[in-house]
Length: 433
Image 1: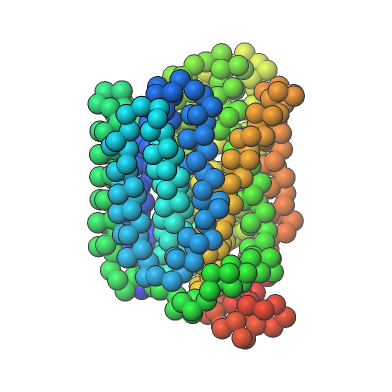
Image 2: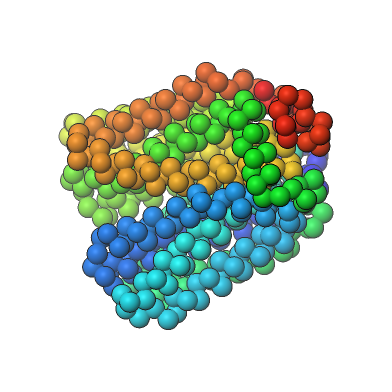
């Protein structure tokens, strides 16, 4: 079903999207509860920062490896049922942690962390494909902005809640809360009208390797997808660097501690809310390609100013304002690249393309974490932070140079046999060139 209507209402006013949004928010909260609580639990269990970092990395790397398979499943099954199945799987996979007692049971934590990462990329893929099938194209950027806000809200609520539940009531309470979040999200997904989602039948008989090859050719030969893919790659490396460098920025350059670090990460959610509110105003003037450029370049500028102001003796409140400001363009750019992938991908391959982008993002974030550790040993924290800002600048300049100002109107996908020039890519795959 496509949500139609003459009025330009916000997509959250439409019941199918509102249910999908709340389902995604609950999943984000459950994910962040686990991402905060599990490493803390492992650190208390082993007193080993190395083992703790392995658990954190397992939240990213598995999705990089299995994303194409997850995308294949997304393209083959009806989206509503797939959302329900993934949510139930996320809850069920927490069960082994009930038997963790000491460091000898770490393998169960590794298993759960990796499994949750795989299920998360599957959930994100099908969620982003589903909304693109029942939200009008003119509402797509606003819908993606609302979806992007979920990550900020989930982190704002889930991270402190995970720490509180672990310290006050123990791991089992953390697991119960996370499982409840996933199950309620599944129940909400089940209430989405079946007619609101679709199953792309053209991909049902495509083998895994043939489908993967067609997906990679689509990304390579559709200019909008290729440019967006490279932009997301640079953003992901920069984000991975930020995860490590942020803590050093607070402790080494600002002289703060845990409380200050938590506050700065939290105020980004305030900026995320403002980004969601303002994205509608921007889309009246800018199409998704230019919105991506503006979002990335603004994010790069705010980052560079924030890092280099640490050379002065400004008060901590100034940095709180800057971190809140950074949350605004973060939502703009996320909404833009999601919309570009959705609008430029042929429907039968959309799940696979989305999963490939998300898997690549997770893998390159892990690479960025490693790069940050290596750079700080060579050039110091501030110089490494400026490298991170330079990556953001490069991503913004790339989008300005390579992406068209506007996308061509979407066309219905045609069979692979109708392709001209590139096997497996029909005119619908070329519509964004």
